[in-house]
Amino acid sequence: MIETDILIIGAGPCGLFTVFEAGLLKLRCHLIDALPQAGGQLTEIYPKKPIYDIPGFPEVLAGDLIEDLMKQAAPFKPGFTLGERAEEIEKTDDDQFIVTTDMGTKHKAPVIAIAGGLGCFEPRKPPVPNLSDYERKGVEYIIKDPNFYKNKRVVISGGGDSALDWAIYLAEGVAAEVSLVHRRSTFRGHLDSVQKVIDMSNEGKITLLTDAEVVGIEGDGKVEGVVVKTDAGETVKACDHWVPLFGLTPKLGPIAEWGLNLSKNAIDVDTFDYSTNVPGIYAIGDINNYPGKLKLILCGFHEATLMVQSAFKRIYPDKNLVLKYTTVNGVSGF
Image 1 (cartoon, rainbow, N blue to C red):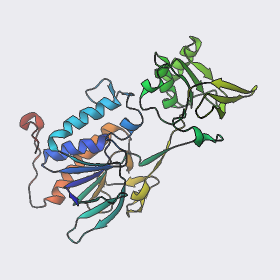
Image 2 (cartoon, helix red, strand yellow):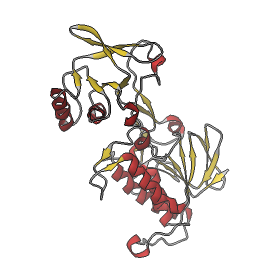
Image 3 (cartoon, rainbow, N blue to C red):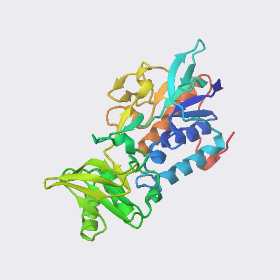
Image 4 (cartoon, one colour):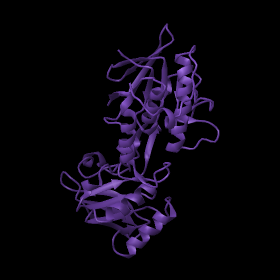
């Protein structure tokens, strides 16, 4: 049995920052995440993608932000259960919770902070015959390391920010050849990114195919080309990798059965302290819902800060909590 003060479900940026804020109050944290490493979406989906709205950082790569958050949390010695999904929850006679993972690991804490982002993600897969035969053999649904595509011929499908951004990134000296296939003539992404793709297409750096879609894969044991359908018919585009970026479908998973008030795939909270309808369980970050909610990392940081104040009062109802500024008191770990 792993025991802690705050059990955090989700080791993404909000979960990691919770460790720091809780540590300032001398509260210990343990994190559970279904992914094999900390970082959540930032590590799993876009570690090399720049983020521009973190205060104090004009630009920071997602992976670097996670690295800094880990350093910030390190003095408070958080525990991690990674590669396991929080599955079952039960309330004990002493007003604590026991959370068991899908691997049978048990955790006990008086407070649970759900910081699971948008939940468990599954890629939206296109209806292409024999698609599963080529997964991990040239078909990838997310780009973790762009250097994986160094000097390769890459076809990307999609019309959103992710497809546009990665097409631009890979075409700027990484891949040998980049093609972007979109089934419409207009894009859903930022106008600046759309214009840059068009400019790079005019310069011959990206092959842009609109009003088109990939309908088949060719190759003996691995991707050697994709079949592209347009109004003019079907043609084969030779490539080493096909990356269909049609987004990810979020699912709450077992948390949806924990008796929490839900709005679609989000957990309803009270903005006073981001508590749920179950006393002792809080939800912060993209996984929660309240009027005016903005799904931004910096908003999750704010929510985590207020949440741990409430958690302290729940754990130590007879102690006075006085806000201490780190500029005055510094930061000391356990």
